[in-house]
Image 1 (cartoon, rainbow, N blue to C red):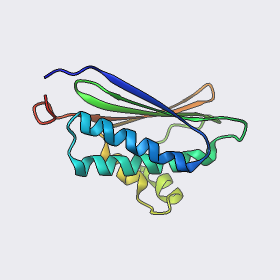
Image 2 (cartoon, helix red, strand yellow; image 1 turned 135 degrees about the vertical axis):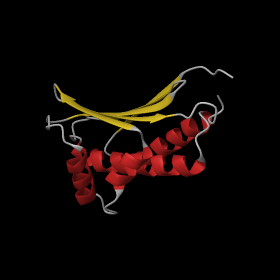
Image 3 (cartoon, rainbow, N blue to C red; image 1 turned 90 degrees about the horizontal axis):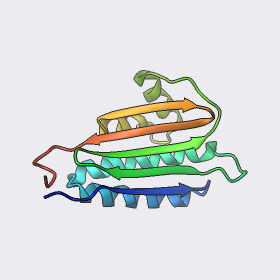
Length: 143
């Protein structure tokens, strides 16, 4: 069964109460593509932690955190983007250490890495973008 491509974009201000909307949207998309509940819960928790860590970096002049969630035939893709000072791209080890230091739980970075198949980080022209890709198992996810 083929379904149409779908995309949702959320614009979050510095109010961390809005992070729950991200979790709800990810859960909706995960269900839509047939992701198992356990994998969905890990992905949702990791993405919410990423958003909570990023919101304080927003300037108080109206900057927003954009979260775009898309489903494709072969993958679920989530893009988290905000404006900020360009930072050097880091390796996986540095990413895990940084997330562990900044997270109250100390495991958000590890959860994020385990919850997706690919992470892309890009910082250019004042825009910082993290792209998370979870590939779907064809035949198991309703396809």
